[in-house]
Amino acid sequence: MEKRVLATVYGLVQGVGFRMFVERRASQTGLKGTVRNMPNGTVEIDAQGPEGLVNELLKTVRTGPPASKVSAMDVALQPPDHTMKGFRIMQ
Image 1 (cartoon, rainbow, N blue to C red):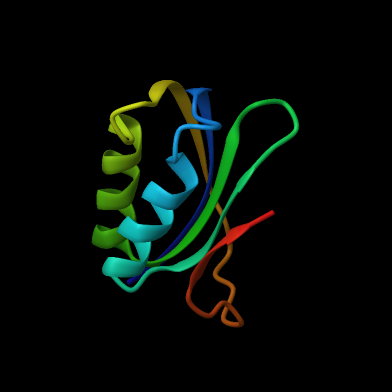
Image 2 (image 1 turned 135 degrees about the horizontal axis):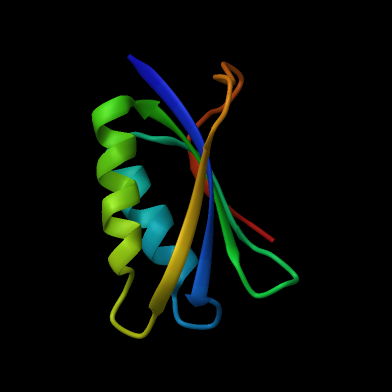
């Protein structure tokens, strides 16, 4: 079953390789979507794919790369977007 989420990650998540970490993990499992820094210091992840893989990505993101420190994460379900292709870092 396909699942799409929009996650906002709070904490020390900018300038520490967080977006590359998310992009690498998502791409390795074939998820589609984007990750980007937001002006308020958070990181936004829009991820879509098989439910189990999306859930696994969210679990991994809560830990993040070694230099990061995730303090909170909001996750909202979204309607599937069948135009998504691949997973990429947005500017």
